[in-house]
Every structure is written in C-alpha cells, then in structure tokens.
Image 1: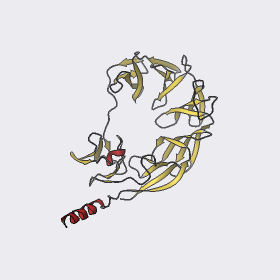
Image 2 (image 1 turned 120 degrees about the horizontal axis):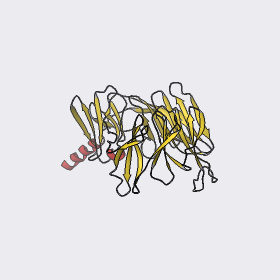
Image 3 (image 1 turned 45 degrees about the vertical axis):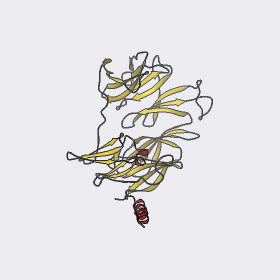
Image 4 (image 1 turned 45 degrees about the horizontal axis):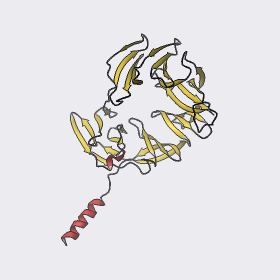
Length: 324
C-alpha cells in the first residue's frame, strides 16, 4: 500500500504542467530558400538568400510587409560583409564552371561593392585572389587577405589606398572589433588557437600596438536597463541581476541541451534563451514553442520586441510571440 502511494505521488509530480510562456503565431513567409540574417530590427529585416537558381540580398519592411531585392544574381554568393546600417556591402561572388552547387579550385571569385542597389567591382592592388574578412561599421574600410595567406590588408574606399598587417608564420589574423578607424585584431596561434593575443591596428596611421583588450562580453540588459542577464555554461545556469541582487536558475541536463552563450530580452520580464523562455521575476523556465529547436526550426530575436524570425525546412517566416 505504501508503494502504491509512492507511485501515485511520482506520477502526479511527473504530470505537472510545464510553466506557460509566450507562444508562436506564424505570419508571412519571406523566403523559401536558405536564408541567413544580415540585419534584424523591429522595423527592418535584411537577409542573404541562396536558392537553386539565384543568390540574393533581400530587404523587408516589417511595418508594411513589403520586400525588395537589393541584389540578385545567378552567380553563387560565397560570402558577404556589410556596414552597420547595411547600406554598403561587399559581396564575394563565384563564377565557377561547375554550376551553383559545387565549388572547386578552378573557380573564379570576384568582389563587388553593393551600395544600396548599385554594384561596382572591387579590385585591390597586389591581391589577385582576395578572401573577404570584414567591412568597417561605417563602410569605409574593407579587410581582406590573399588566398592561403595569414596577413590582413585594409583597403580604404575613400582614399583608394591600402595598408597591410603581417602575421608571423605560426599565426592567423582575424577581426575582433572596431572603434572608428582602429580595428582590434585577433592573433590566433596555430598551435593553441584557444589562447589568442590581441593588437590595436590604426588604419589611418598604419600603426599597430600590443597588447590590446578584446571585445568585452557584457551582460545583456533588459530594455529598461533594470535587469542584467548572463548565461553560465559550467554548471549550466541563467543568472539575472537586479538592484544589486542576483537570482539564478540552475538548468537540468535536458534544459541545457540547447543552451547557447547568447540570450535576448523580449521585454522587461521575459528572457529568450536556447533552453526556453525565462520569467525573470519568478525564475521559472517555460519551454520554447514546438518545432523551434534542433533540426525542426529556429528563432531569431530583436531586443525588446515580440517580433521574431522563424525558420524551418519550409522557409523563413515573420512571426510574433504572444502570451504572458
């Protein structure tokens, strides 16, 4: 009889309903191809799209639902980098003989500058096969490296000049962050890539100073700046700080399965994470909507907004999170 009672208690606890969080209302489909977000705000969406026949950059007005092509081509879009406002983008286009579905060593790659909807070829002296690395937030500088090389070359679109930063034979250079015309460079050693060093490279004076501090990983602040959220990977947890006091939600192994380093505030109460929607007042974790994790689908968020981008095998959709 005692065993029966125990079993009843366990069954009751297991059957307890999960906390209710925001639910997904799917709206207009904006792409049926393979879409990658470039810019996503509460009013504007820009994404790169690869389909079986064309590549494109598409601009969507979220207020009206109107979308237009900024650029579309039959060439394969191998890569792209844009300024902060997505008014200037540099596109890496492939014109290989084997079609859009296959890249090979004999392919011809070219860079073009896209300013709004106008394109011009980009040619950098002494770099016949440039590998696109980054574009400065103001769109002035384009960073590339010669194919198979480790050094960085910065091309100034305003003055039509370029400067170069050399790497040692045992390191590769990458971009960490920007501050005006100064770029913080990551020096990644081949032997131990998890322990890079950093330098500050001034593109105006072509002076490089070391050491430099990498971009700080700041807590994500709520829209009204009263709550700060942090993801803790080991042991897995979500931490929220408000008025000097910290609340922690420790995650189970299952809850932490899709936990990522990033999180985003939907409003001043609800925090979206890879593990679920966290009510930061009660610290209860509501599950993500069905079909939005793993291979089933994905969600992209805008800070302080219930408008989301929902992707699944059928395409990319504008959607809304509705609920508490």
